[in-house]
Amino acid sequence: MSAADKVANYPIGDDEAGMRLDRWFRRRFPELPQAHLAKIVRKGEVRVSGKRAEISTRLEAGQSVRVPPLGLPEAPASKAAPPDPRDAEALRAMILFEDRDLIALNKPYGLAVQGGSGTKRHIDGMLAALADAKGERPVLAHRLDRDTSGVLLVAKSRKIAAELGAIFRSRAARKIYWALVEGVPKPAQGRISLFLAKGPGMGEARGGPKEGRAEIERMRVARHGDPDAQHSVTLYAVVDKVAPRLAWLSMRPITGRTHQLRAHCEAIGHPIVGDPKYNRRPANDPARADPLRAVPPGVEPKLHLVARRLILPHPRGGVIDVTAPLPAHMKKSFDMFGFDVGERDPIEDAPDE
Image (spheres, rainbow, N blue to C red):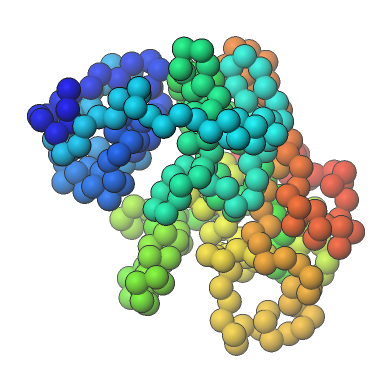
């Protein structure tokens, strides 16, 4: 059936439960432009079990998705481009842990997890190279920002992906991130609780087209009750420091908002070193003017954030506990400042809230 012909309703099975609506569309209609998908969802032409939905709506087994005429044929699997064997080799080199149900990858800095505008190479696309004999390919269980390296969990079936998605949404997973931040947060251990929303606030300058797009993609601190505002909570602890210039921060996000850790660090006045989106201090900022507070020379201008450790229940029982090494640029910085990765991480003792 052609997606251009008529309205169609697609039932959601157990293997698609927990999948975001936009990801479901990417799998069913890979040629559909993201901008067109956003438009038909915004206009209410896409319905989930008869109700209006958002791009981020999570699908449940037994629901149905109403898809309007899209003006393009549903891409048949038989015509899909053959996977690149180099992708399989690259992915296997990233494996930190693997069993019959899932794979934990060490995602490198600079490699996107999913496709987007101008992004052709990404983990989601590369996973086609690991499809099994039945043609079933691994499925992302969560995501990381392009410039955040570290532990990324991938399920070998949609059923396991749905179960892992439920685990992440229940907050049963413990994620630990390491970062280098400008300055030294006080107190040394704390809890950041803020409402975040996407885009510039009322009255904020949007700049030119390029700057405007960057602002729209940023998360900002919002007030409770503001449109699209979502509550976000992060626990943090200073592991070591080079006072007053910078600190090695360990963080545990309790919620999972877009750019949460990066936005939280900026909000408390200690942006992550090398963050091009949330570390844009003006030239007259004291941290830039005072050489004693400036980031030392030799630190690479790359995002110093790594998804260091992931601990969560395994869908079949037991516990998954995976740790990723530091990316090369962070290892260089840690060596420069004498930080010992074997140091006891105080965030491990922090309560859940």
